Image (cartoon, rainbow, N blue to C red; front, side, top):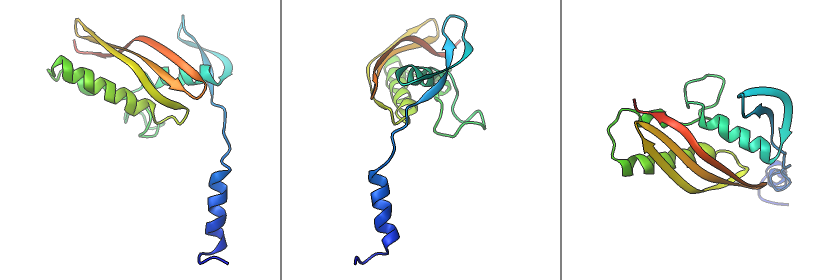
Length: 142
């Protein structure tokens, strides 16, 4: 018999047997931007989740938790240096995407600032494989 009540010891056993769930999302037709009505799983679902997260402002919509979305709007109109903007965009990208437990890391991050537009490219390393994103518009400083 342990020092603690048995329900605490049983809680540790429950944590060890955590069930892994396959992510599911509604499919997006990338050419039209419309939902297709089909449900996708795994790597394609994570790709859609990332795209939606990168295009949803954090704290703006009550339907989402405060962990969902990005804060790229904070970069607009601040007059930050290019180096600071790049560092903050990378931090913000990692902050909004690493909330998903299926995403392990963000690599190959690059930023392109041209005519008041900020575009980022990166590779998301997930438990299902890698996903490459190129030239995602994250902020318009115009």
